[in-house]
Image 1: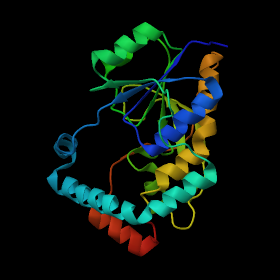
Image 2 (image 1 turned 90 degrees about the vertical axis):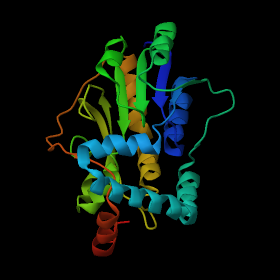
Image 3 (image 1 turned 120 degrees about the vertical axis):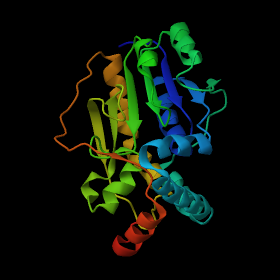
Length: 255
């Protein structure tokens, strides 16, 4: 089995650290490349070019509501963390390389220096074709949604919001130039519990998806990557607008 280093690229987040720490428990120390997220203004401007300002304004409303709601929902998130024994922050001694962007030269420098067996992405920028071409090892991604049906943002929420409860889950896939369009390696499905909401779905999904992340890396190290055909339609999703979110909550009880 390949024993070269593992590089994990992310903007961070408690549910992502839960996955990183699970990988560390299985494979030993991992180098984390921690990128600076887009500013809210830059993110919204980029999205408005594609979706229009009305939709983006509605999405911003939901984002603000979720941020406020998290202050009152931390108990639910803390319960998941406690019940699943998740470690949701960097451990002492964790090697972290801070970069402005995963598409900058720093990531390529890290890959050239460490010659990793795999680059694992989660919650980071879409890698450019140029960056992907400069990485000679497999690049895989953890996505909080069932691909290709729930590509993009809030995959767990949208599965529930559309009544597709059987596809509340996560995917590990090979990275290509598209948005969560690469070949699927593994998927995990589970169920939200009472009190879960859009603020806690990602933590719930991470909790039952740690095993597929480990299995995908094991496959890379053993040079046995095999993709699966899900037979699902493909669609990209974004944050719900505030009117979508409230209407779905009232009509379906999905918050």
